[in-house]
Length: 133
Image 1 (spheres, rainbow, N blue to C red):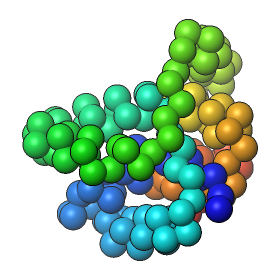
Image 2 (image 1 turned 135 degrees about the vertical axis):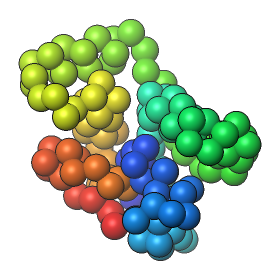
Image 3 (image 1 turned 180 degrees about the vertical axis):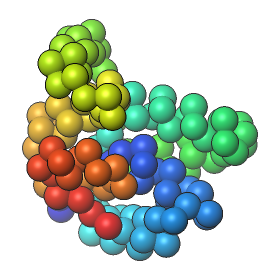
Image 4 (image 1 turned 90 degrees about the horizontal axis):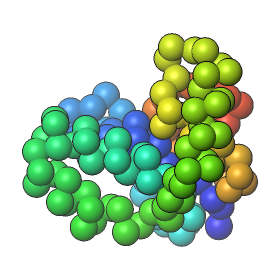
């Protein structure tokens, strides 16, 4: 059993049938669950996912995600220390394409010693993480 970090990009690809990565995400997720990998994410990824689902697909999609998929995730709740570490890192990097959620995800993935990342965001690969596809 491996520890795998789950990003918003993978969750949206998994849930959106029209997403270019939907089929690949479904296959990857099936492998992860069959192997009973530990799926790690952050509360910030959840907030981002809920917001995007609500905006793009409505509150029914948020409800379905919360009931069906969120319980499968081990959530690292972002406290003030991790938040400030993320803001400091974001400002140090000064890279417009990175978000606070991204940076906190990188920090958390390293702290949690994940073996791979389930994501469709190239920033994870640029950070040196192995991506599951």
